[in-house]
Image (cartoon, rainbow over all chains, first blue to last red):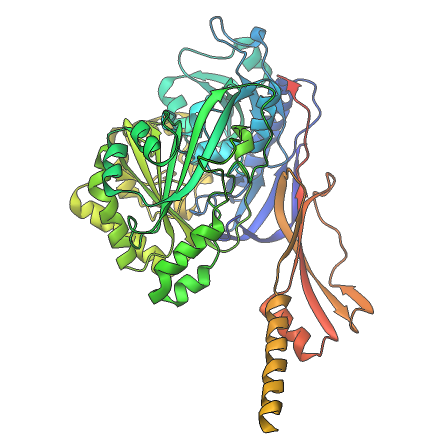
Length: 503
Length: 109
């Protein structure tokens, strides 16, 4: 039995200290030593199904927990059974004989649900492969990051869930192997995983971003690209107001030429102080993709600019001294930003995985965002900063870019997206300032969505409005996977019920 | 001579306040490539200026068969105040650690 109970009933607090499960009974799903990955996940899925039956019999709701990274409390439920998946973390290479005709197996890997993004990245790099995007940190489980639509700022990429080609989901009624209608894995492989095959585009698009509400994801087939190098440039620059217009129209080359290298960047990120965003220097980060070569000079994660989201410092001061907030934020930006190489420094390189870091939170985190159509950026960015600063927001404002992501509930649903993040120390005033930003965007009639894993105060009505027909399709797919309302309720929580995902 | 006394008292107060702040410092040691599980913690009380150390619970942690990823040692404000108020006779500190999830070689699907 790969599931073991951990201690007695008690509290569990998430990674960023933003939520606590009271009176939770904790269990851990552990990897076994089966020779083949399909045998391993067949055994695990059977155990998870039995465990779900036990939970239902005990009249307890369940929650799968990866790294517990989401600050939005989407993974928090009280009086429930928690299933920690972190020790279910083996990865397996996929052979050409395991896939359907016409599918290229060379980039595919079978990943157990508890493997961290960092582990997946390492295993891919051992095979000469790489993820093409991920979030700023790599300490989430891959399944958890995909379940919430985690993303970075690779301009031409979507979210991390775009890597998922197939997945195994366990519900009380069965073990399902979900993939697109065109198929990925062959029938013999799927039978070996102990799963019932479900090839359907809508169900797959729902399961790419399940928000923890479709069952327990036990394994994923992850796609990759050939390994590549990135050259980072990181600097502090005063950004001209006109440069926002270049970003809004997708002229990243011009922006890069003005503030870094005269080349097309693959990744652009701008962190500004919302108190005078164009008068105080912004922290800029660019990544330039280059072909892989083995003899590149190795650099530490710090030299590559890892940890660029570590801005939790000085939280209490920002809250206690509102008159000094702008200056303190600027000081925190200098302290908290890893000192990356500027244009005139010797070039450093790293693989995609080497440029990420598993940060440790230094203070309670506030973490929220809005995703807008990139074309609206020049019109609304200054407005957002103004509203946020005027109401006492005490975090930096980060601007990132990405393409439309896969998954019916992907927040990045515009063809070209600008994601505006508010990341920093938690305080009531900051949360209220973010709420004012949301109100103002609504008042201006600007379309936007919010990240599932962040503290964005979503509710069911708003989710239905934001996602429209895609939300209806997601619920229809959910009802195919979980036709029994009692089974849907098993995966519910106060948060998920409120979002209309489990009821 | 009165001002010398006040200056000395101020200096001693600053020394004490410095100890109060420094006592809350977070000593953090990590391996290079952590694969952490959830954080666990315990309070250890050093007694008699370090002559005796008493752990409130035995150092038994679940899920530690793959070793530890990182360890933090720190004192909360209350723990630092206990230490100062007892003239250092009692020195409670919190030890927090995260066990390692384990690293497996790449297998075949």
